[in-house]
Image 1 (cartoon, rainbow over the protein chains, first blue to last red):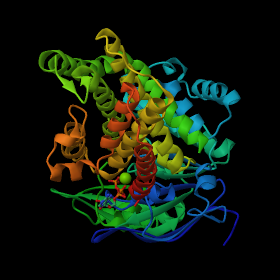
Image 2 (cartoon, chains in turn green, blue):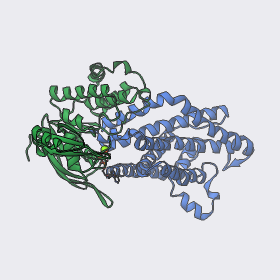
Image 3 (spheres, rainbow over the protein chains, first blue to last red):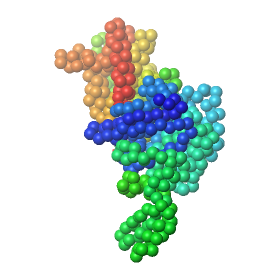
Length: 285
Length: 245
Ligand SMILES: Nc1ncnc2c1ncn2[C@@H]1O[C@H](COP(=O)(O)OP(=O)(O)OP(=O)(O)O)[C@@H](O)[C@H]1O
Ligand SMILES: [Mg+2]
């Protein structure tokens, strides 16, 4: 066991009745890593995060934070974790401030600094105007930012973000990207992010895990993964579909293009190509 | 443990503050209707065990109203578990299950005690003399704890809203009608008496009525109430653990 790892997971499994939602996954994160967990709908991303954050009990496997067993040291470990769940779980009847204050109590932030810490974060993230408004009046983007803010209030060492930008407009998404990148760089917080926007993972993550049907099928950095399938794509626009062929160099792709009678396009490989190749199906965005 | 209790109470009371008037009004109406219907309409001139019926009824209404209010936290925890997922915030936080259970239960006790206060006000209005004493205080706190903890247990076990309604209809309502809140249970047929002595409400009603009307309190019953309290605390912990399964 390497104690320098923030998180070490071995053989993690969750079985529901007849089906394994997560079927024995293993990985380790070191301090400051920014990891993407990608996979189609129902692959087991949320289930994995729920087990890692103590919301559900694994059927098998072990979880260690800084070398100590999550089951035995759950309260100490939980204090190091920040979670942005897939579904917003703010208290809609409370104000932004009250939601954050509740979180501050739960995580044992001392009475004297609670309000100060909350106001600093609200200022830092540009949500100060919403401080005393009830959450039920917020737009989806504002709620999402508040959920992220709340997860950071106790300065976690590791942050789990389950589809943090789903359903948000491009501008808010960029605001959120900047925000979490800053947290990762400045505070050296380890981050695990799931997303269906593959270009988001490509932009943010230094390492990507692909999970399919409950098993991790790839673990690597985006550039190496892209090299693995070839650097260039030839898109062949047929009448009823677009076919793709992969090549290591632009010249090879162009040569193939000249032999084709259909409309064609040569472009660089993206992480999405890797993803679709690996999971063998298109995913819903 | 303390952080959990404080956090849960902070949340519940912050929300309660915004709804207090509505909730107090709605918990005032049904006991008033009972008082008018049974106290004046049906019970005037009737005596039960040497007491005017309305003096018999008032302690029953205290247990009924506080039970209803304490148990009502069950439906609310349910909503926060299944619809808004706010309960997950407690589960992922570094707080003990015992803290969450005690926090919710204390909120239930608070609501139950407020409901009892309302009946005391009615007693003043209807000019019913009550004996206020330490035994009553102990009993009403135990009583509201029992049903708050039962509420926590229930809300952790049921899987959705209809499960919650099932418990209300098959446990809470029968209890209120069978356990001596409106009439002395010795009039019930033998089979029912057996059933009634399983329900904790029977004991709290007996103790609270005796304390408030100057009767003799059976200490064994107070002990049984404490027993139910501990039992439902344990079932709450167990049920909360099973939520993570
Ligand atoms: N409580 C449950 N009972 C039974 N099956 C479940 C339960 N929760 C999840 N599953 C199943 O486990 C599988 C994995 O679900 P999970 O939510 O982890 O997927 P996901 O990768 O997060 O998907 P998405 O991208 O759609 O959020 C799915 O097939 C799902 O139906
Ligand atoms: Mg999910």
